[in-house]
Image (cartoon, rainbow, N blue to C red; front, side, top):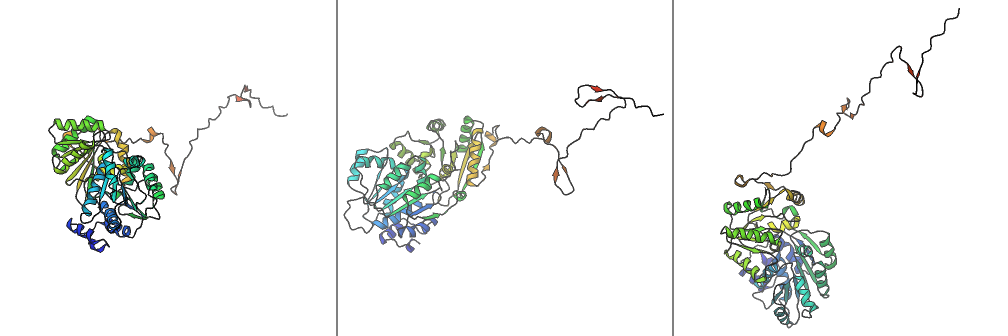
Length: 441
């Protein structure tokens, strides 16, 4: 029960109103330590309740502040607009019985309107690093009194090139008392470097190993001959697979638009989401998917983080993601909160090695699936077994002890003929045979 945590009564009232009963494992592990003021580095799978695990401690820190609202007290940094919007909604839900106000600044929104919002000084500021730095450089953002900084999806922010921006913003919060870093993957050397720079003696909580991050999702691969064949497989899956909502991931905006166009031509209710779309279109795409106005979303990795849609139970990787962490986040859009999901990756000749490396990273073996109605000719790399003669392997003899040893073949020595001439020592001319001396008389 959430009542076991030392949370303010107004927050417990909000938790009850939202029908939160039992805390998830990440919430049970992180909330008590965060309430103690510890710096945390938390790894837990998508859909595990990470947002509430940092929102509730942050609100608890601010709920009894007696000062007039003149400074920003908490900063939450995230990689994408969609994740920022979702986090803002969660903060507002849990703060509904308090006087705490939150604001958001991200790219794609009017800069002057955001500056006007900042003059009202929200208690909690949520946003993406790039736009926050723009407002900071313009003199509209003051962070001297920030008490707590939250870095959500920190590994993704590094992948997007926000490392220096994040470190700069953390440096602009010299009086912060706590830093919380959350992620769905373990990240690499870059993330470890960031942890060393911005966290102080952190508590490391790993709720899931990499191989457990999506244990509620069936993971399949289907081989394809080329992109046109992949499109046929996608259309078959959408027509025959049982699902409520689906998302199709591509690596490029051009391919996302192409697939979207083909689906619309087939009368499939779909939307497309990628970086070239303005904020209005991106909001519309997500809202239509959530409300059921569309069953299918075609997207680049801009939708791989923070997109939480009820009933999203099918993910199709039209293009294989470029890293194991990105794969984890993509398929993490399904199989959330204990529900089951299906993730299908389409593999051409050029995708096989990348797919195999992701299998090794996850320490898993994906289920191979064949659809006879759209079966192609490619089924994976051919295994060539060389015979002993073809490979030039010499047979080895084995002695009685079982040790192998190579026995060199000797050429038979030719016996000289009785009257054959003998070769000289220098091999230049044959020597004449001498007749034996006559016996002495």
